[in-house]
Amino acid sequence: MQAKKNVTMEDNFAIQLFEGNKVRIVWDEEQEKYYFSVVDIVQVLTGSVDGRKYWNKLKQRLSAEGNESVTNCHQLKLVSPKDGKRYFTDVSTQPQLFRIIQSIP
Image (cartoon, rainbow, N blue to C red; front, side, top):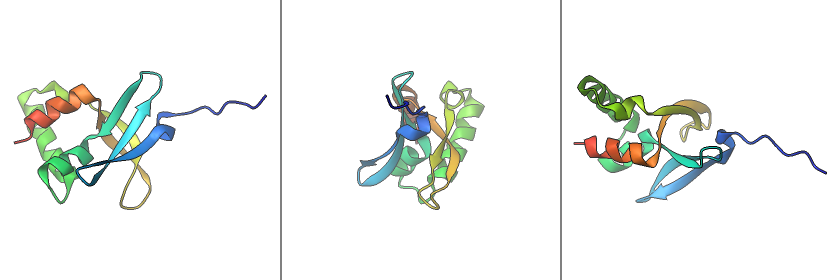
């Protein structure tokens, strides 16, 4: 009998295409939820050159307004499309992501 590999959320990493753009996604088997890279989604929806900067500004504004969507975001180590290294990235479940999307001007 072969030993079963201990799978982490980072092992369940995938890249999906959304309107021709790459979006990083992680599947959490324990909670049975997908986590989406907020930076990637923001970049796709806003057409921003740097989705990370746009998200940081939006996050500041939402935090100042007391919006809980930002505090509900988790951070997971995702592979960077720029250099292939893993960095902590804000991720969100689908319901949380919809609230963030509604906040984008």
